[in-house]
Length: 398
Image 1: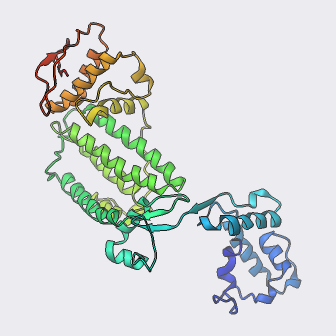
Image 2 (image 1 turned 90 degrees about the horizontal axis):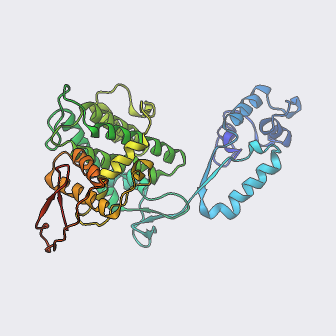
Image 3 (image 1 turned 180 degrees about the vertical axis):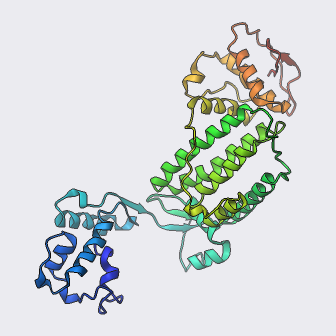
């Protein structure tokens, strides 16, 4: 690996017979020569190589070493990578010159099967790009998996990526132009909604997690956070403010940050979004997003409380998030059931979910809860009788 840092200056051909730009012949690469280049020992004129050439090679090596990360296949762990550690320890006594990390990956599969020409599922980079394009191919590669587990390139994911990227670009373009069919923009003078704060807080949380995933080279996790989770946050915000209208500044911020988070995976799509937003320069040269406000755990926990029982009207006792804001005051099972049904009915009414959920929460912790009324639920039908809570919100009973 140390030789890679100067190979482009020493080799003019693949077999090394032709000298490179440095003009050093193979017979001149003696032990003394490598001591000067790799170990930084004083220059000796007896080497037969000009001092400025040796100094140039030394600068090139010192720029790249010590290496931060070596990426290789898992099949090389018991041989090449292990011997590389031994060689570094033998040459450099200072552990600071040894490799700082090694990242190993597994083999590539196609649709959960081993890729081979005999099976007819062998895909080259040229074939992938001509079939799906660069961004959809990179999207599927990021989704394939990380680590030493075999990565699975799923053609269905690549197909869906084309549709998802195209649909999302059209939605951003039409919505920000005020022509969106499913999302209306709120007037600039209109008061803010609680979901505005939650949406901004959720974006700050996801940006922090995505940065950690990219730093650790967990690209599947980064894709999940940068694409799927940001899409989910936008969808929840869009549903919650359907009647009040969306904040245009927040939506523009969301589109900008998603474009930047997706640059390592879908650079061409990000550049198109960047152009739609009217930004100057290129997205690939823009700085990583830095939210002005850090994540507030209380807002995150409140958002989880509001969104938790969305899968079914009849899930039983509520499972509250493990956060102090949701642990105090303690709620009994009966009180939590009241909260579940109040929230479920809030969905049914399609009103302002944040107001109804807050009203239901006050009812749930009230010490003067009435006795539970029992009613038989008919299959495929809503409960027969409504019940009005002490605060006025209508709840459905089982």
